[in-house]
Image (cartoon, rainbow, N blue to C red):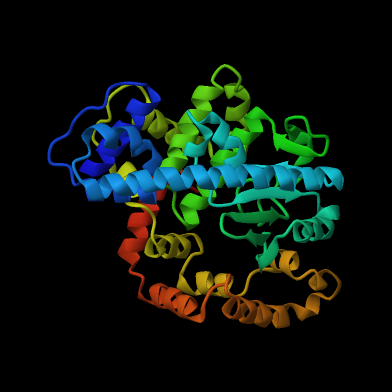
Length: 379
């Protein structure tokens, strides 16, 4: 955890414009790899110029910095092209996540984006897909929640049907009628963003969903800190508390915010507790399986649910089920076959590996993960 503490201190020094503290006996390669995994390597640029002893690590940091500037510049050009095309075609569009978070960073290129997230009005989903094709994007994969489009080398666009797909996932009902929660985005007439409070609600909901199933990164905690600092005079915390309580995630929201201020606030980073260590180690498939077994009341229930999703989920990917529900078993088989056969899907090897993990899961490990989630307020 030594390199994690040093990484947080380096980020804090950058944010607070303080002099970097020289550390002895740093495993610079390990520090860089940790920053890279957490998408924070750009924060090392100034530190590396003054303190990095390894030319190899210094070169990696410089290369990351240069490539991120190039990537960010190209992404900005493409984002404007996409939004202008949607605006011209009068497609009601919502931009979320990374596009909004970039603006709260010291320089917006420092908030790395793997993909661009856009939600479009359900009535225009087919039309928006055609617009994407018209401006040079190729459909890469069709998930239940979104379509993925690509334009090499930098652009991956997720075209969302809904912000939260499943009815039993936190935030589904709250974000089901999305447009009343929105305001106009910049000077566009058809492009929207969530208002300041609801953008934060979605930030926490999205972070919770990721924590459960794929894990979160230091960057995600930094988002929480910077959002609170940027809008501390604007956010309605009484309103947010009521919303979080209604969603059953008040404890989680408060705990995550406390961790964010502990890591990035003006005070020094102290020792990490059990929950923080769990976050810093990063999630892995074992943790996800252990958690899912716990919340699904056993291995068999989790396996069935993962291989054979409920009708409400399947209808999103296979609209034919809305007219012909008895085709559900056929669509289950079709889904598995399409996933295995697609470059964007889940390989047979991956599915078999997950099944193996489910089979071998130890009840003690399941309980350990569940205890961590309980301490953080994950329900």
